[in-house]
Length: 418
Ligand SMILES: [Zn+2]
Image (cartoon, rainbow, N blue to C red; front, side, top):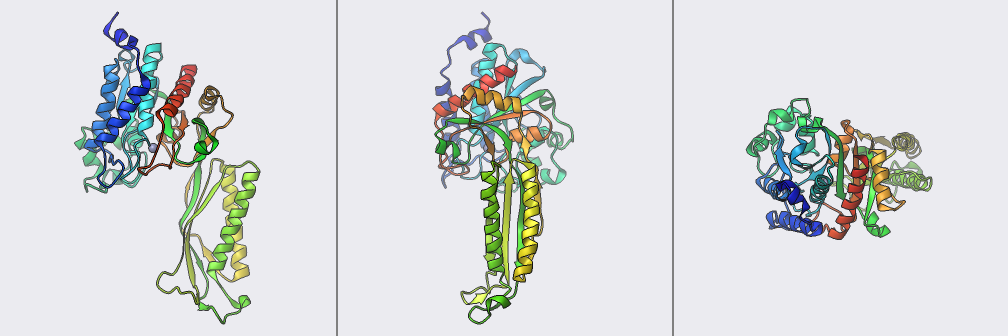
């Protein structure tokens, strides 16, 4: 029996290893202000990459760090052969939770160990910098591995250090030129499919009493961060209704119309979420006795279905025109930010769903590294694991037993695919 076979033959307490790694990540990155803080391309993030990689090496996997600092683990015999990969990111938002990203790296490691045991070609990867607070943009580690970072991004300073992304990549031993070379690193080119386990960032699995679910798509969005409705200021006590041009009532009508079509759309079985995260009259001039002259508001409309988004775009335009006419106000929606929904791999989704033996599957309302792989042409599949209190906050709460069920399902799907 060679050394590798011997190491792989040692029975592994997967749940204990998962708990030990998650505790290790947490202990290394506690924030004095609460939660955990692991900045992208920080020494803390690197230390967590090392902890993760050493656990893989202890069980016979070989470590390899790519040119931008993502850490890969593979069975030693795999070499440069094409193979599927699984993992997630190890950075966190400032004062975040311990499981967003980290759970997926642990799941990736466990799947890679199982795959090595079963002779299935599979790499695990701990990615860098997925969270947007650090450099003002998301999926930086994945996009860097695709060679897709713009020069302006590489020159962006990190919010806490003032050093640029290029400087941080170099500081952690990487090559910033590779991150913006316009060509994917070899590690990406030999990745035939990407699998990611991630904590659910909303309350649905908890509400449905399900430990895990397959993810079919990542929602796209239409967003208007700086919309305005212009009317005319006036005395609240004297201007009669038919002579008013009240933007507050107009925006309220628009929002209720959006809420109504949202409810109808759900009844028809569509996926849709609508948020007005900012609604305000003029901060300085507004009083209880003044009809406001202007309301500033923001809209964020998301769906996993591009046709639904198209329908909402048309509905919004028509209602703004109609309400503008009937109320004598003018809507200017301003800059529009759009992203198309991303379909994840259907066969991968179905295999995860079959392994979980539940008819329920979900969509992701937030972006993920897996979605970025899919968007750039590498098939990707995801599984969500139940988690309380959302994410990006210190109260994230995932049970290791749920994580293990997610690992079980994802590995069953990987094995079926291989
Ligand atoms: Zn994440």
